[in-house]
Image (cartoon, rainbow, N blue to C red):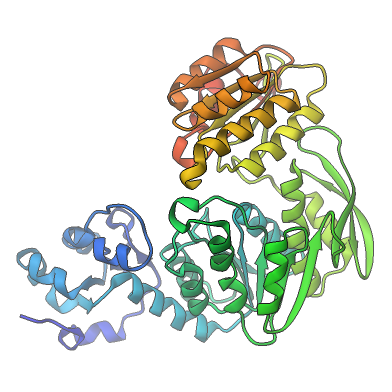
Length: 478
């Protein structure tokens, strides 16, 4: 039996749905459940093996969903369980594509400006900074929660506009990790009015093969912008700057080293969690006391400033907004402990450039205390991953790191490189649990510890181990 949309309960056409789910455990009364399955994931650029959510359709109906979207070819396989709900099933060829088409229609009806942000590193932080700046400029901003930046998270974010249509601007990060034109697909859902590109780094070589192909994939965000839009590009990254040729409107540049429209000058660290720089724009300049560490975060702030200027804010307003921005969780979070040591929790993601940038901040601000780096294996670096880790380890040793703890897999090459570079204390741990135990055993008053790792390595567990054993300064004084 071939069921199609014509067999739907006619009453559903008169029912408003305001919530949409891909996890049956999250379904709320009155929502719509999209039952994703392995072919959907494979067709839309997702690596790995995934559960077939079609078997959870009865559970979703038990929780009060009004309709479920399923693949036609999955109905036959699950017919015995699904037939009682036949008149509340919407049949499609690809559930992720259907989710994206729905989101595209919702966006088209909403019709307000979209700021799209991509880059090999810093997307989520830049998105949060940009949304904060625009909010301070009086805008009601829709943004991805967490890092919902792919072909599933992006449309789910856009679908929030059904329940919350009063947003007047959207700031959306767009990610990619395969050669399947993921960013191009996201731009079809929400064509950007402003396309921001932060950097091109060798972080998805495993799937794309070369940094040139990574640049081509990132450039889809500029190629996919609306006619008359604005490309906001990093002038210090030649591969990013070259994307200006794809702009369908104007181009605004930002940078620290090369001449750019928006620049940071006089950068200095005045303690952990406090970077000062002068924001220089065509209309003037203002001093910024920025609560995030590292040069890479200054670039994120400049990108946010460029967007704010494009939406009519002045340099003073933007400087004020950057001064009072909150630190995103696990992205340079400063934890001061009553025992007299400090931990910089930057365990959300990692790549060689960001690791070295944060290590530089550590060295600059640690004073006379020991400088300890807990560094997780850096993922998706391709066939040269071992060499990249080893080279990064040597650079860390040359910076004056006192203790390096490498965590999992390729981090063993990081440790070998550090030892080859003259580091006397470089330790390899097979996982974050072992690294947490090692760190809690050796940390002492005066130490400054950087915890840096990719999500897949779970280096946040190192921070959890420290917090379970030692009291935070704030807790002591409370």
